[in-house]
Length: 87
Image 1 (cartoon, rainbow, N blue to C red):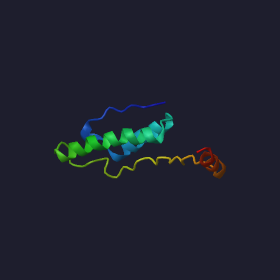
Image 2: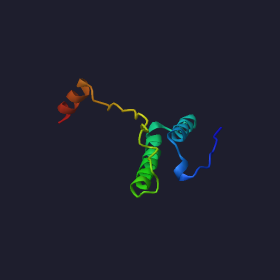
Image 3: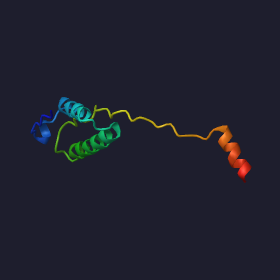
Image 4: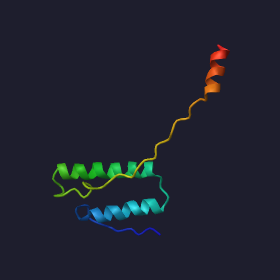
């Protein structure tokens, strides 16, 4: 179950953002999508901080979810030899 908190932009804390990330995980959102969402939030709060709308950036210590790396598929030696032989 998702719980929504209505907060003023200035009242959002690091703990609120951690709770949001946990809810994304609970919803089954993939790490790559979580990272994309959090990147947008970090950029928005960085903008608010630079322009002086907020005194402290709550996303400053926020870590991005780890993205899984896909190992590329490679040809076997036999497949490479077959390609060379076909030329």
